[in-house]
Image 1: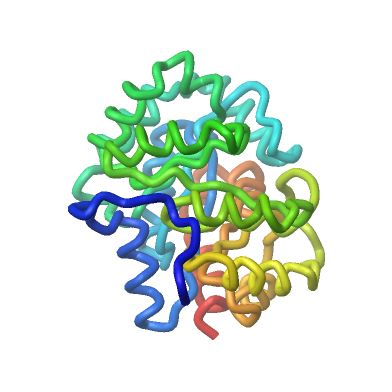
Image 2 (image 1 turned 180 degrees about the vertical axis):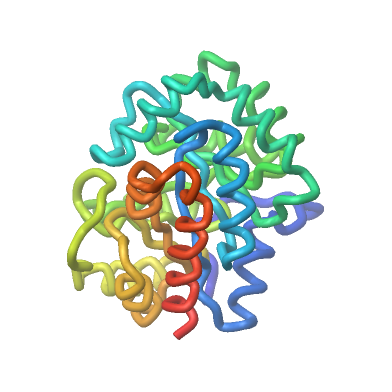
Length: 279
């Protein structure tokens, strides 16, 4: 497929970790399974155990949320998770320290999900520098204005990470073209209008959106928001997506599991989703 309006790349630029992962999965005709959880819920130590268990049970990439007090894109389940994580004392520096402690053990690409204000307060370049040093592969910043993405994507890229952008069902076609060709690593397709959260049914229009994105950009497409069951994962795979992101269903299980069983139960659910993705 011809590449259009793609962000210019330096001749010496190599493929990112996320690019390599999607290329590897494409060769093997596999759907990328990407669990999401909030760091520090129920505590930072358990998060580390969960990350390793997800890797063991078939996760290809993991999206790790940094808790924030005003998570505009998130529904009640993830908002409550972020609140619990903040109460447990989780900070961006503690998340970085956790990932540093897992270097050499955690090998799947890690994508940090966070909002723009905490990064500005921290210092955007300093955060990227620290994240890159502990092996982070990408950033998702849902409230970053599109008009600012080129400048900040260059900074993220300079630290060997990808800035991943979101497309919504309501995004006009021309804006969709701009987003899908400025994103790096993959295009994050939001499957529903609204915030994150479990849904009983997948909307059929998602299939058309996947096809539309593939027509206008060569980037892989990963679908998230509202995906909460093995059946949803299988359906997204059948629709031609390159990846699937499952968040609230994992986060809900973390909140409801017995603390002694949470790691095992999260691993079991990940394994169920892996089997559905591979059907």
